[in-house]
Image 1 (cartoon, rainbow, N blue to C red):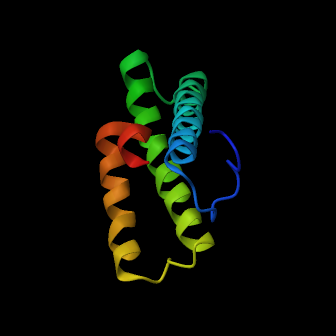
Image 2 (spheres, rainbow, N blue to C red):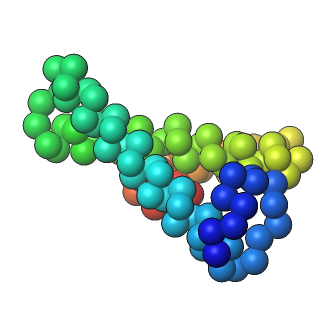
Length: 102
């Protein structure tokens, strides 16, 4: 289930795809939490809700980055469907974090 997590161009079975999604979902949540925490420690933001909002904005480049790396490794980055889906990934990540962005 959790095999080849860093091999972005691999063809995956359904259980491997689920494991890839879960692993990168948890990594995205960790990164989002760290973004909120670091901005709070730096005094840029104050309060839990501001930290949660900042963390949600941190999940946008993470989700788009994972999508872009997968598209590049599968040699599909220049296809129209991928060019169209990367902004959609960013929009979904802005509303639902890593859960929708991935």
